[in-house]
Amino acid sequence: MVTPTAKRKAVAHLIGVHGMSERRGCKAIGCCRMTIRYQTSRVDDAELRQRMWAIAHERRRFGYRRLHVLLKREAIWSITRSCSGSIARSG
Image 1 (cartoon, rainbow, N blue to C red):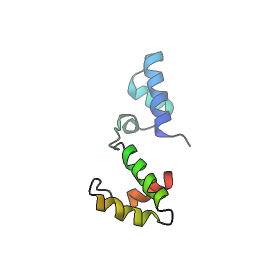
Image 2: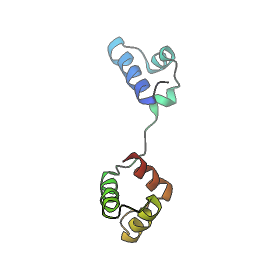
Image 3: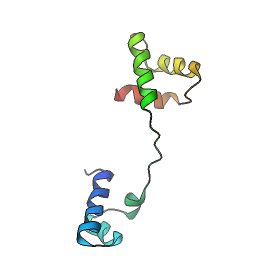
């Protein structure tokens, strides 16, 4: 399975080097044009990740749910519990 990022790079290569149109490049790769045009809306959570890591090492027994409660008490971040869980899993 190829990631959308790899598909974007491949189509960009076809467009830049070989002078293909976006439509033709997508057809050659076999992907949808919306995959190429999609803009991610992900925010940079490096500071949040660092703060969560600091709290987790300070209180080693706490899981992501309790870390989430502590982060909400700080009132700096407004994230969902599932988002804090995915951040905790990713390291």
